[in-house]
Length: 164
Image (cartoon, rainbow, N blue to C red):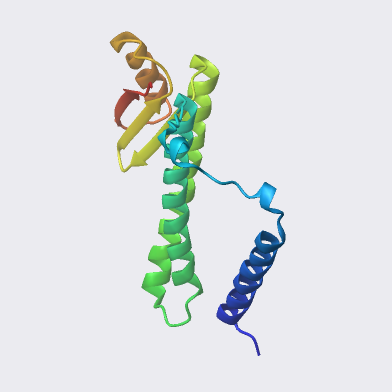
């Protein structure tokens, strides 16, 4: 019986073998060569504000998904006690609520202020990174008021303007 590890090994080995054969059968004119005078090339990478916001969103999403996965493992574990399963279930509910609130805040900021944002929530602290130039304290206060209106209790909201 083939287990997952063996299957991955066979798949990766076949991929490497196919790429090796492909490289060997390429005509010499298709293989890039570099001379000594071409080593002085400069490459520039342009990073847009939206790329930074997307990277922050992906990082936060991965963190939440990892926590959800850990909680789900506990729920599905037969050796886990009832208390552990209850705690994992509560954690899963909190993470779903948190994810929903993050989406709601990002949507609110996009609709009312037409700005892409990344929201991170840790307890009663909300960190918002905006994809725009610094527009001043009054603008940040307007966003804070809009976000605070979504909550009944006092939240500590910080705004960060992210520009190139």
